[in-house]
Length: 238
Ligand SMILES: [Zn+2]
Image (cartoon, rainbow, N blue to C red; front, side, top):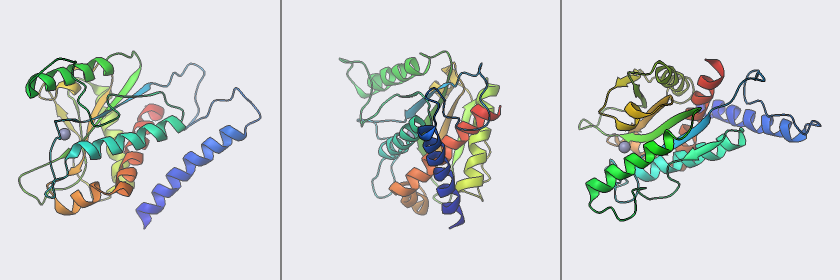
């Protein structure tokens, strides 16, 4: 109940901020999501990437649920909430599709085209922060918990990963001891993104209990808000 209470408080804070903005006599007042925003501050565009889609379902829970739908659900809540908070939000996909170029045939070529197009979207903005949402899987079903991955080339991405991890531990998974993990060219988007980018593996579909939570629409919203507040911490506290 404590976790739930904290999330309700977080959500309540968003509603209060938005209500304050709406009730303000000052029509040009900008909603301040957190902290003091200086005149020179330009809030980055928030780019959200729901992993997989279309023929590529990603990893699959024991009950047959693929990660692609869970990823999209979390991204949709993040998108809508971030928009309320005043972010400009870009999503690489907003439905169950692969975004490969038209006319490309064969799953591996479609996957390559899909990833190239996702990267083009992510690198299409000078001032951005990007988050790619995925679910994890391992042969041993005992493992659970969210984990953040970032490019070893980017200090900013490392800071973003730590901020998100901090929120995961304080808000959703108090017992989570997973370290943020630097990666190289094995993760194409992270390795080639020009902006700070993190891949959030929200949990393990190979763990029955965690898979059940991840398949729950309410838990998906808890996860979405937790990740979003981590992004917010990074943007306003760095
Ligand atoms: Zn995935």
